[in-house]
Length: 286
Image 1 (cartoon, rainbow, N blue to C red):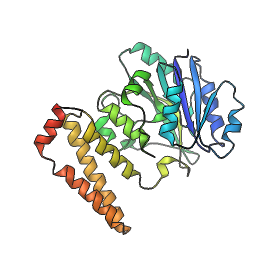
Image 2 (cartoon, rainbow, N blue to C red):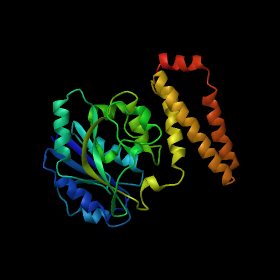
Image 3 (spheres, rainbow, N blue to C red):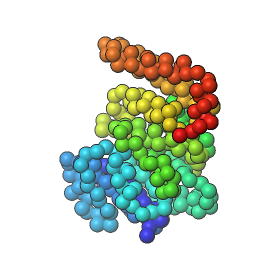
Image 4 (spheres, rainbow, N blue to C red):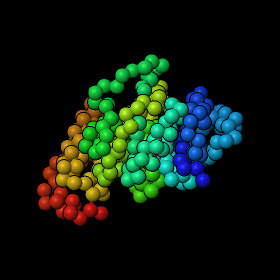
């Protein structure tokens, strides 16, 4: 039984999947299984994957990246789980460095590595606001997702306890999971750029319009369902209010008035929440 289950979700990535797979197979740490979940590709992705008999390929009807990742995890057996997006690459020492970190720190549940960013074929330097924290990441990650799927490794027990990725979210599913984890547990950073993260291409989920709508949905879930501390709750509510107002203003400019009113009302709902209700929810987590 492999120690690490590596999960690659993919959809119509015939031009990229080969390099992603080969970056995993080139790891200098070999105690892993590689599972690629094809989420209903209509190009040559599945044909290309036939060239890799050592890779377990799981085709499924189009269900989205959350379902694909969850399917891969459920099919695997490793006590540790690592994800790689099919447009990203790993350096050869990525799995070894993280496996050693877990072995040295048996109480750690999740960690991530640094990244090198490539945008439209050129290396770019992340801005200061993209700098990854280590440890308590929750409040800093509310405005901007600071945990990357391709850089994460976590214990299977944590993934299962959190219920995996939310399959109702077509995007920002990683933002949602990292916040649900981050409000409970530290996310440790191994500050080495062991992932090559590619961006700027049109088929990225992060290029979808209206992404804040999904982040808002995630924040509402947090406020309603998660055992937030008082400071976490205040921070999440503040970001929710800001995102609701920005999104509502954008809807109004596009004459989507009913949608704008919905998000304005949602902002008011949390802005006017009585302090005693906040304390009650904190003291009686679901």
